[in-house]
Amino acid sequence: MVDRLANSEANSKRIAVVESCFGAAGQPLAIPGRVLIGEGVLTKLCRKKPKARQFFLFNDILVYGNIVIQKKKYNKQHIIPLESVTIDTVPDEGDLRNGWLIKTPTKSFAVYAATATEKSEWMNHIGKCVGDLLQKSGKAPTGEHAAVWVPDSEATVCMRCQKVKFTPVSRRHHCRKCGFVVCGPCSEKKFLLPSQSSKPVRVCEFCFVQLTSGSLAPRSDSIGSRPGSKFNNLSDDEDEDDSSD
Image 1 (cartoon, rainbow, N blue to C red):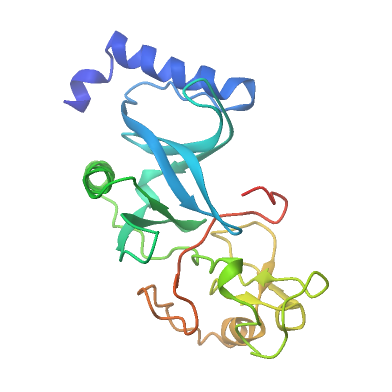
Image 2 (cartoon, rainbow, N blue to C red):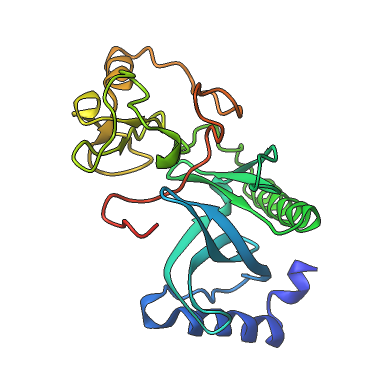
């Protein structure tokens, strides 16, 4: 099916429409063999609060952006190569239902669909696209992925020292290795995590010691592995210079 659509006029037109919605600030999306599988609005769990984002699933990439005018204009385009993606379901919790984790070596986050059927369709299509890509390339599934950040609202005190209370003066920070919300004194160190950045990034004192000693155990990404957070492991992919997401 995908192979038949790859060079079809209808597929080319659909991709051209997506490109036009992102405008000049977006990256070109039309390349030989690329097929637009589907699209839709998903709720992305961001650092401050859940936000609606427009997602486009292609046979080799996942694209999403902020909604400026529905079906007409989007900005802040993000492109995720599907070869590096792994997905895990998220148990329903309160108002956050029908969710799953999208995990990559660079960034990881949770999204939520409007219905269980929509969730199932998204996960099935993403899984098939990833599987097809890996089969064609002969590569193994990605074993490492970035930490999924704990949302700001789930930590009133530093998750490491358990002492510093967050205020407008005492700001929250995120460890790029474990995803915990930590205070400034507990996250003064930086460490090079090549999959996330070409420059050293902020890590908490605990992870820094483990990283420098070479004894850091693999992170657990099972829901409920972080004490004191009912949305454990759910987060956004916000960069420090992009406070809107």
